[in-house]
Amino acid sequence: MDDNKREMLKNLPKIDEMMLRIEKREGLAGFPKEIVKESCRTVVESLRARVVQEKGETFRLPTPDETDDQAAEIIEGYRSYRLRRVINATGVILHTNLGRAPLCREAIERIVEVARGYSNLEYDIEKGERGLRYDHVRGLLCALTGAEDALVVNNNAAAVFLVLNALSEGKEVIVSRGELIEIGGEFRIPDVMEKSGARLIEVGTTNRTRLSDYERAIGPETGIIFKVHTSNFRIMGFTEEADLPSLVALGKRHHIPVVNDLGSGCLIELDRYGLEREPTVRDCLAAGADVVTFSGDKLLGGPQAGLILGKRAFIETIRKNPLNRALRIDKLTLAALEATMVKYLRPAEALADIRVLRALTEPVADVRKRAKRLAAMLRRTLPERIDIKLVTGLSMAGGGSLPTQEIPTLLIGLRVAGLSAAFVEERLRRRELPVIVRVADDQLLLDVRTVDPEEFSEIRDALKEVLAERCVKTPPTRSISGQARSDKRGK
Image 1 (tube, one colour):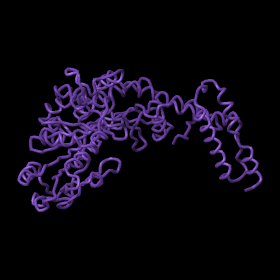
Image 2 (tube, helix red, strand yellow; image 1 turned 90 degrees about the horizontal axis):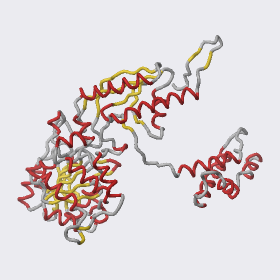
Image 3 (cartoon, helix red, strand yellow; image 1 turned 60 degrees about the vertical axis):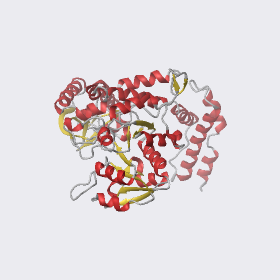
Image 4 (tube, helix red, strand yellow; image 1 turned 30 degrees about the vertical axis):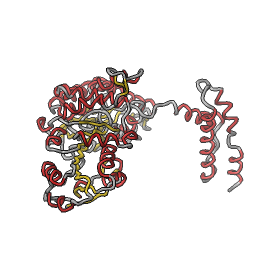
């Protein structure tokens, strides 16, 4: 290490001195000393690493004001909410990275009402004694699906895990090789089964599994026949699978319960609206499945939850499993789920008010009308150097649902003279209220199918802000001849 680096290391800011200066700054008083100290240490350690790694003599140590500013920015950052609302203009309706299903207005209102005070979460008001949290939604779920009983946990992976542990710990679970799927976050059905204590018995092949394959695998150690709906992919071509009624009949002959994991549970017959056929929860229960599991925040359009429905005897066994307490849902999820399920009592209301269902079933002609409204709003307010046009395209269900379904949509295509689409996309994404869009062929694309009309003005303001910021920071330069030329650095 040369003498220059040694000198800079010796002159690194003193943490105690930084703390004294920062604590006198307006707006930073009252923060715990531990947070202030750790923020100062982060700045100093970063500088230390920079000095050691730097090559040449161009690097200089920042002034005390500059280092204090860096530490203050870290401290202030703790007060900035990391989890926040975004505008989804991607056209992916159940975008896992963007929180999947937005809640309907009534679900949000119920969360606020229940959260603002005490609630009867586990209190039976009529009897004046302890109750079960599941009772708030059990009746609704049973009425809407035909189930004998219902239980809710915190997500569908938890639901599958709990069911397997409760009904087949130490026993064999028979499942088709073609249904050993991987769900989001690299969680695989075989891994969930292994952790549950059940022993996986694979039958058939990836593309063809017959009823006889299941029957040959049945033995004295068989605990469950497990059917998984491959909601996040489809195998096309030379395929064969044993349907649910056949598996139910097989299970009855051998006195083995049949569990059907739907993944994306659906209560509406989507094929009535031009979408691919998706088995409903009622269909599966009517076919005789002993237990059905599915997610609350996918096609159902509610909060994240894992719903377990089925025959009363099996649900009671699952409910009594000690793991159920570790996987149970909280009062806010229950409030949102109950409000969502109430919507399904009038299917027309569910289609209109549950945003996921509305986005999936909205006719493309209506999407076009909304796209024209937004395009007209943008043309009125944005600079003339922006080329705005309507583009036909395709939306996706997303969230591991309806994987082969292409949903016609209308997009707004934007090109800004002198700026690349990638640059504008990044600026929109980094705003306090991020707008998440597509980029293709150096064109910004906003899919109106996933944009609520109430968000139109926010998109307009976001674009105005990004373009105004760019104009202020990088004004047009002039050539030697004095002719104005546009700034190309955004490309």
